[in-house]
Amino acid sequence: MPTGWGTIVADLNAKKFDMLCSGFWVHPNVGKFALFTRPVFFQPVFVVSRADDKRFSKTTNLNDKELTMVALDGDNPVNIAKADFPKAKILTLPNMTDFSQVLINVSGSKADFTIVDAVTFGVFNKNNPGKLKIVTPENPIRIYPVSYVVSAEDVVFRDAINAALDELILDGTIDRIFDKYDVYPNSYYRAVVPYRNPYF
Image 1 (tube, rainbow, N blue to C red):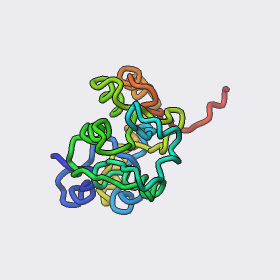
Image 2 (image 1 turned 135 degrees about the vertical axis):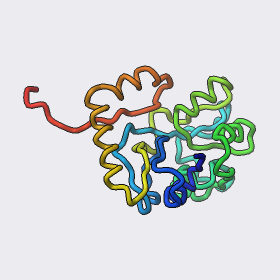
Image 3 (image 1 turned 90 degrees about the vertical axis):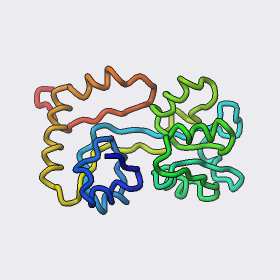
Image 4 (image 1 turned 30 degrees about the vertical axis):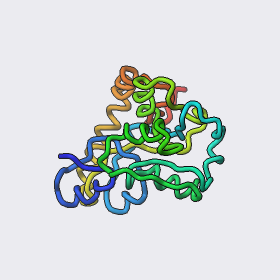
């Protein structure tokens, strides 16, 4: 069942599906109306600009009324921009737009920058080398827990998913998956189940 980042809660409440199986950045605006599972991993996000744009050496330079950020309507980068760069203009694309179009808007000079994760940037950069750059790869603008989303009524279902995720993390399955698919720098920060080994 297709859904958009801005319509997940409404679609869950309409019983169109039981769980959003794509990783979702934990956000309080959604947390008021739905339940998040424990984080599967953590994902840093970065400011991305054109590769030849010399104006941006640090993210504080982006709070400028002459600059335009592009993002999908209802997506978290819009909230980041409003909080961190309130003077910048925001160009929003329809929520169901393929995210590559956000990056195409930056590379094509329709916008000055966007905010994106390293995987999305890496895939675009592989197919369009030299067009864009991460402004400060050593300093993500946010780090988000990434979880699955279920209806606010499905506490037992959420807890069952959490138990399964704990086991997958502890037995090394999640690490083995990341070892296979974590191909772009700064893509993921791996989750752990906290405990103390008494023998170390």
